[in-house]
Image (cartoon, rainbow, N blue to C red; front, side, top):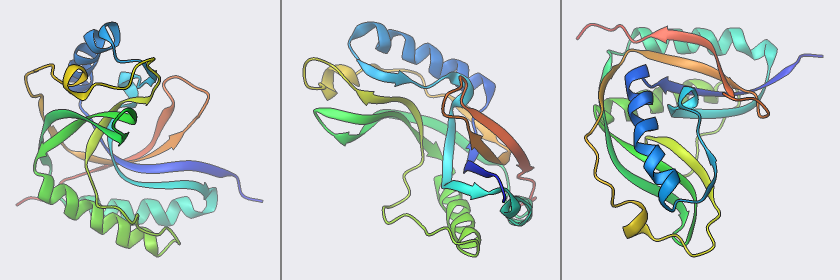
Length: 190
């Protein structure tokens, strides 16, 4: 019987951006943002598609598709955007940093990955793709989350060139919890 891995496909975030986001998160943690889990900087990424539990024997075909998609994609010039939340406004499930820049091309990459993964039985999500970098999960404050107070911090956007697509494995009881299994260069010349 084949082992199963909890997998997702993502665009890695540069080391400089991870450090910049860590610096942005520190005062948020200290001030008032009571989130149950703050993301370890090494785990920061832009999810392209979540696959979930995947039999190990599917890895070669998934890897082949991702390698082909990456080879046909030029590097992406990305910029961090405003902070935002997903979930109930009074008790959000996710605190995130938005992503700007080559987002049209990032969405094209997302669609190509979804189409390729459908061949392996992974259905596209029903909701619209919203590229972001997760910073924290599960708000647990005593008072309802105050969006104005919590997200009013201004910060200088962080800029980087995303030059890889990666397949990650989740280890739920580890820190950092994501292991990059394979990385594929975005190297199409435009």
